[in-house]
Amino acid sequence: MIKICLIALAAYLLGSVSSSVMLSSLLFRADVRKHGSGNAGATNVARNFGMKAGVATLLCDMLKALVAMGFGLWLGGELGKAVAGIACLLGHFFPVFFEFKGGKGISVGAVVAAFIGWPHFLFVVVMFVIGVALTRIVSVGSVMAAAGLPLALLLFGGSGPEWALGLVGAAAVIWQHRQNIRRLLRGEEKQFRAKN
Image 1 (cartoon, rainbow, N blue to C red):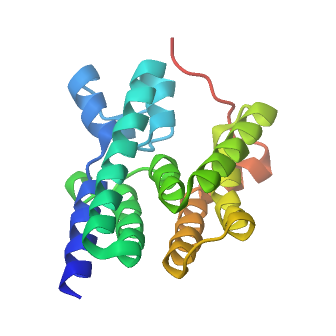
Image 2 (tube, rainbow, N blue to C red):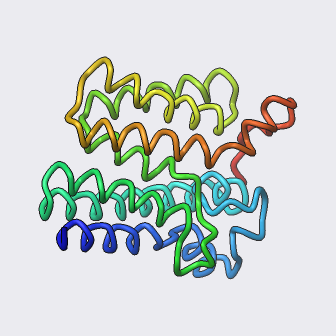
């Protein structure tokens, strides 16, 4: 139990390292949460500060999830991996270092899928690409990718902790996109265009 608590704390704190806020502040002397959609994520960074900054944010967020889940797996096995994934997502959503205003979890969710299995990761990436290619709306791809993770578990299997991680992670990411879903239903969600 002590190991699991340590994993959860470490993963939450790592998840709370908001790459978008840090990069936008360091490179552009601005808080990305005060621009565009107000979301602390790679898409909003790309919209407001350019594609290079958006990709850098994506990679940094994926790196923190990789470290968190790698630590969880090393210290606590399959259960530790699942706990780390969920805790890292929570940190990303509600970062203690940045007023609990974080991102929507797609970058961290991609690493969660990769730690479940490479077929699962590739499946959710394909779902994301299809969604964005058909609509040019990132939130469509994001929701499709999140919803695709439980389907990937059905197709390719997973352990008990991986099922818990996949179901909780997918539900959490979709919940974080609830405002996007409302805008989609009203036909108000904007297509993606990165700043030049």
